[in-house]
Image (tube, rainbow, N blue to C red; front, side):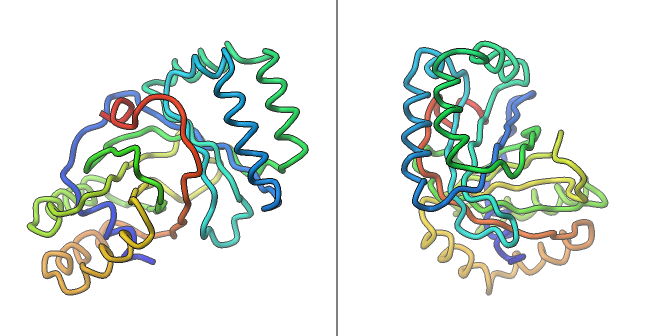
Length: 240
């Protein structure tokens, strides 16, 4: 699993994310037979008057592989600022469309987790055609050294050929966890992710990077998810 973190997040040209950008994730466990109903209820709400005022980007994600985590679906909401999140949350609270959405979703699912992250940095090319996401949980004892190792790898010949996107985040509110950073790595398909990861096995710069990043970073695990549907603004507007 460790190679998936490196393969995705270290092989990009760095671009800074806007200060204050953040995201939230609301996870639930649902019966597979109810998946289509969850999508339909979400789409109906986002097409309502209140849904159309959403100021960021929303993605409905389904889990492909996430270990013991019972989450089957997550709503991931990205904002330019926490103020945008708070303002929209207050605006939709108590509205008919929101109550209708809750009335549809609650019988279909059981909540699993709510988390909030600060978006620290983005690399590569934000693309709304991204459908497969790898999530990598890290514990860094020296963030400066961890980022220095990443920057060195991004400048390598192989690193500059990566065509996906990645985002480095830090938990603001994620409960009790040893994680200090979360890396989201996006691809257009699982096949694209596999080809990229396999291509790094014989890269010399890659081997150097592994030595350097392991000196300051403990790898805690990974998940893989698929985007089912999205709404709102383009990813590039939120992350750049």
